[in-house]
Image 1: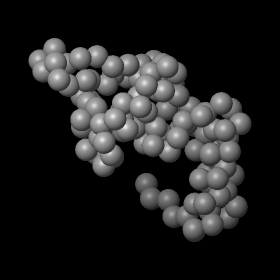
Image 2 (image 1 turned 180 degrees about the vertical axis):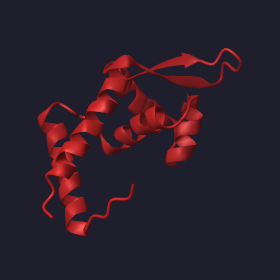
Image 3 (image 1 turned 180 degrees about the horizontal axis):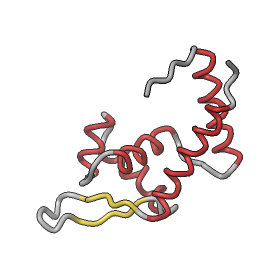
Length: 115
């Protein structure tokens, strides 16, 4: 299904969703949200190295973001048993619920867009 939005509608949706996240304790940065959505919307496995390549940032940038997200129980990390140099990122129940809530917030605000 294709949805066509005018530039103003897109910006209004972006604004309203971000305001909702700020008002309800969603202190994730745009980078952290991009990482979270990559982990939950794309098939695993996900590694620090793979996420860094996909987002075109360094591994330390991903590690710092994952530190914060781990403290919020949105993701978990473990060493890859096959290659101990790799860190595998795992989904959590709390993370899945957060992604679902984000989808619900976007859908609700999209329905309120001026025509």
